[in-house]
Image (tube, rainbow, N blue to C red; front, top):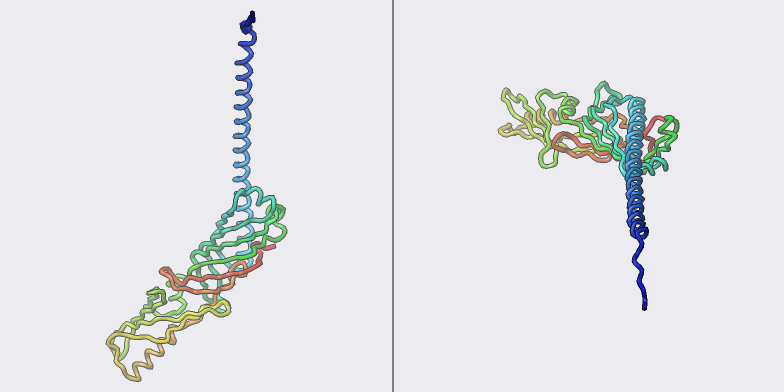
Length: 268
């Protein structure tokens, strides 16, 4: 006859203890992983802030070196994880906002104001040693800048009292009150805009006014006003070697788009 022995009390106690030890090790491991993950995230954020501050400081130096003035650069670095970009010294994308940018017009006493210049730089090389010491170059493969010359500043450059500039149907419109033959009229015109050698060319070739007499004397006066309203706006040297490629009338002013390739973002 087969006899079955009852488990001893010792075996019954050891099995729960082993399970408890296993659970304890698992909990400790999970806690360590969480702590490690938090540490990595904190380190990533610290490095992120450090790089943005250092790149911003270098950009401010270059803006000043070019004879421009602006609020401190607002820098944002994209791409994750960030630490790997810092260690590699190469960043996917960097955004820069320069507010209240002002610069002198070449060969004139005028100053052109751009309230906000938004800059996107891609393929940026910024070795960690350069960020730490400020020695060496921070270079971007491609840079695009978009800013706006407000209409008040443009009207000031034209210098005609009472002129109002605005965007209508995607075009630049001018309105100017005038006195012709002792009568008051409001001239209206649409400008053509072109860009050449970093210079904005504004031309009002045709001006009209309701009720304006159609005779040679009046037409000559109107043509003279059209010439006075036309002007060339020589833009200041923009940061990072940006060259203007497009001008578009927008609700807040003339929107300027500029591009550059393989340019330093700092003053090496």
